[in-house]
Structures are given as structure tokens and as C-alpha cells.
Length: 327
Ligand SMILES: [Zn+2]
Ligand SMILES: [Zn+2]
Picture 1 (cartoon, rainbow, N blue to C red):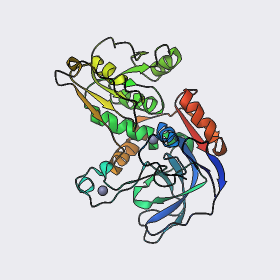
Picture 2: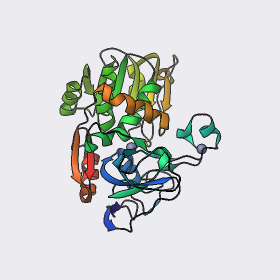
Picture 3: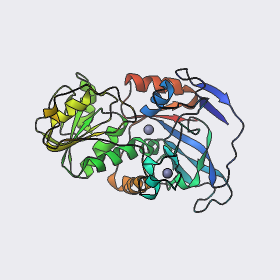
């Protein structure tokens, strides 16, 4: 197999030939056909997550087909198309796993962070954490659903049932979530970097009823706001944009420091919460509804060996929607 390997934090990924991996008991080997590029991959490469592991193959929005079954795998078939998400394994016995919060497991394994991921031609996955994808939709267009879509979905559920939803940072997750929110008959207010008129126009084209800079207030107070950009300054901005009792959801795994702000912005039962990882149930719920919701992902494909270019373009905001690597 071949992979783009992070050998040192902060270094460019290196095209590397590796021995074909063999699945252990309960594992599958997946021949990869597409892998989305997520902001979390940038945090992995930059060493912004705790206890970074190298060498590692990043990538956790994997679409591919099973080409080898480990011993004891049930419910999956050779050749079946599956999606491999960020949540790669949980312990099953900690209080969080037992209590239905496996996203907070004390001993998790994360795809592309603490186990090798999808910037490769093949990978190994715990069969219990693979999502059967069926045959509808193309591999590249499905890949961004595996994290951007899933985390967006979990964030929207946690934002509550309010109709007026603000999205701060209009990248891969927001471009999917805008479509979900519209399908749910909610109103989306999109916030971009100040002056980024083209992204604002793009957000409107996906159904946002208002789009503006993150330094602006929406035309009416919001029920909830979801922050996808890794920018702590957006937390007080979003608090200003929600009404009494409104909720601000921080959806990223990493954020720059949140500046201090006057208590009156939080007062009146406004809330700040974060979203961490996903549960398998999130994936089942979201992937079952995705075809019905008619989500169309906008993707920019790169050959696998151009992963460094894809990461650089993501960092610089050079494409709309999501980047996807194709072996
Ligand atoms: Zn656990
Ligand atoms: Zn991700």
C-alpha cells in the first residue's frame, strides 16, 4: 500500500510505500476510494492536539470497499462499501460508553490521529465502527459526510430545535449543514471572514437567508449559533448574536483562546457548549437521512500524493466546500 505519512509534527506529509496491513480479529481492511480532508487533519499536522502520535497517516473521512475480513467480523461483507469516521474504537466499559456517551470514552482510538487513517490506498478499521454506505451516491461526494456532515449534524442537534441558526465559518461542515437546516425548515444565517463576499454569496446560494461578516450582527437575534471556525474571538461575537436563553455551540476540536468578555453577554441564560467527536448512533441517524435530505456536497478532488497541496489550500481557504483525496 501507499500512504501520505506524517513523520514529524509540522512537516510535510511524505509519500511512502508500506507493507499491506492485515486485519486483526474484529477488524476489516478497506481499499480506499476517497478520503475527505478536514480541519482536524491540519490540527494533527500542526501538533495542536494533545499527545500527538507520529508517524501517523491522517484522514478520517474514508470511503472504500472491504477487501479483507478479520476473524469474527459479523454483519459486513467482502466488497461492501463502507465509511470510516473519526471515532475508530471505544472501550465499551467506561462510564461514558455505558451511559450512551461513547463520544466521550475514556480510552478511545481516533482514525487518522491515534490510529492510521485514510490518506492512503488502504486502511484497517474496527468493523463495529464502520458505517455501511450502500450504493447510492459517488465515493468522492460521500466522503465529506463522514466528518463534516456528522459533526455538523451532532452540532445542530445540540443547538436545539430553534428555527434561526447562525453558522460561523462557512467551510465543509457549514455547506452541508446549511442544506440540512433548510430541509428542516430552519433559517440559516451565515457568518464568514469580514469582507469574504464570495463565500457569503456561496452561503446564500445554499439557502442561507442572510450572510455577512463575523464582525456583523444578524438582522434579528438568533436561537442558536454554531462555530466551526477555530477562532476563539467568535465566541463573544456569537453570544452577542443570540437572544436570551440562546445557545452557542463550539464544534471544533481545537480553537484559539477565547478572549475575556463582559458577563452581560452570557447573562440571561445564554449557554456556551462544545461538541466532541461522534457516537455511532449519530452516524446511523445522519447517514440514513442524508439521501432523503438531498444533500449535494461540493468537492475539490486531489490525487492522494497531492495531500500537502490540499492541506495548504484548506488552510488558505482556497476552495468552497470540501477537499477530497483520491488514490
Ligand atoms: Zn469507553
Ligand atoms: Zn474531521
